[in-house]
Image 1 (tube, rainbow, N blue to C red):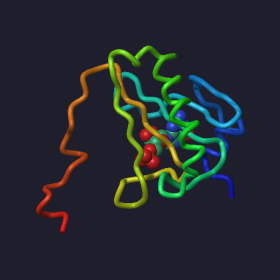
Image 2 (cartoon, rainbow, N blue to C red):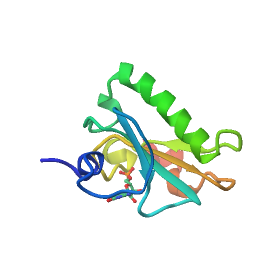
Image 3 (cartoon, protein in one colour):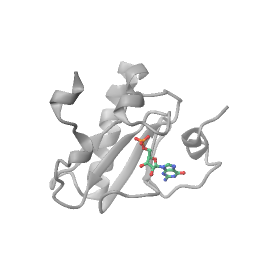
Length: 119
Ligand code: 5GP
């Protein structure tokens, strides 16, 4: 069964697109957590980063760099995040990178537990 990002990639669910080519799509997150919050996906379904094709990841790197240039954060900086699997906090099981920017981001407690609790 197609996941929600498969449907967005196919145009069956509308999205606010930033950039697109044959293999990748960048669109605005529906629930932004920063002034700029863009999701970048491969159109082909990969559940998460752990199973991503490393050769395609090279092309995806170039695409992400283009997205950063198009939205004008290539010089000011941005954060790139991918949540991988359950402990990574992944909710949509289709590989996606969050590109966050437009402000000075802090490293919040949301992202980190006390290291003593981790083992
Ligand atoms: P995850 O927690 O899996 O790393 O992030 C999933 C992200 O997808 C969340 O930031 C959420 O707001 C976003 N999202 C979920 N459903 C939709 C949707 O239908 N459209 C858009 N544009 N973003 C979505």
